Length: 117
Length: 114
Image 1: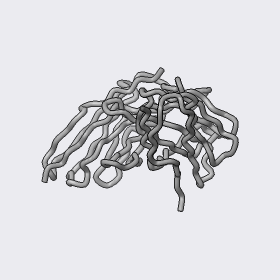
Image 2: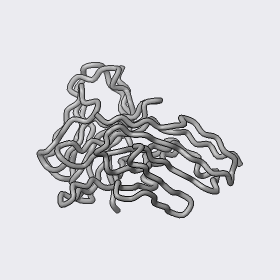
Image 3: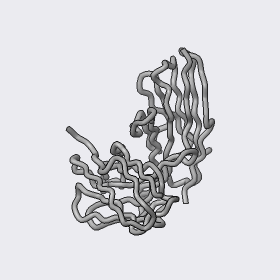
Image 4: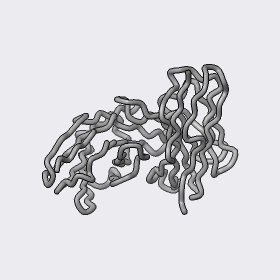
């Protein structure tokens, strides 16, 4: 079954304790992305990756890191989480056609609800 | 950077009526405009999208129109049903060069009353 998976689904942590949220897709998609969703603010892009070893900042990258060592995985790292990073996080992936520079339909993971105390 | 404005933020209609949600964008180079539906507690899912070389696209009860000159695009849902109740997000992206960001509107909570 084609899917995007995220782990953990729920996480409560404390300020300053490093954490990683994993994201994996089995559709051989080139493009992967992380979003955070907050009430009244919609979905905001944190980081995205066009392919292995190619990552770039979205609109709200501060306090986050990513890596793309393999095509299927795109972990989100919070080196020193703070309470303002309490949010619902979504990973997504899509095809990218380099011939016409087109990003296609985003397939979202189930979400990770993070609480930082 | 790109800015996407979405209106209205909430919309309540009677079952069978039509619903229209509008979005405007700022980057004239944007060329891909998807719409996502998010039911309560679920992940966003694509319902329809349109590219900049097309003015209108329809899929059963759902249609999207794009006006590139005015930089706005709209979602039209006809014959609404209670299961259409959800939050709807528009988005835009500029593919090309070095920027492949996807920018979302803040969402519209659609309630279809039986």
